[in-house]
Image 1: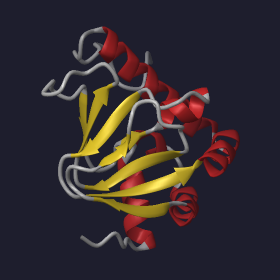
Image 2: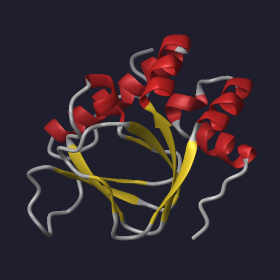
Image 3: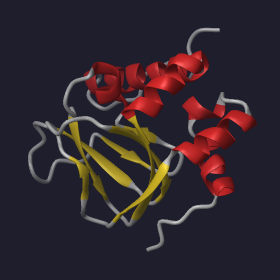
Length: 158
């Protein structure tokens, strides 16, 4: 599995992510140069609940499954993530350890944004900050609703 992605491919994947789709194309191009690309083989953990949070990840290829810390073996995942979806934002916002475990359900290629770059991005791009907060809150609401998607329009009340 090749983890190589061109700058154009990285920018294209970022445009799929709701948080980064709001960034103008030239900003996404700069962001695409800031990320590192990582391969995760099927069955391998990206991180486990309780790990120190370090990076935010955007799925470029493949699929990931998210499991809460108290999930029993064989429990279905809380969420499945595919290309353009973001994972790892909770720990970066909160400064706390990872709240869930994430495993690749098929070979995956991810783009990682480290804490310092992420923090600078949030300070420079308030639209990204807002979009990531909306994503995080929607996921928390879904968890509280027992895995059901929250009602209402994406992006909040008009």
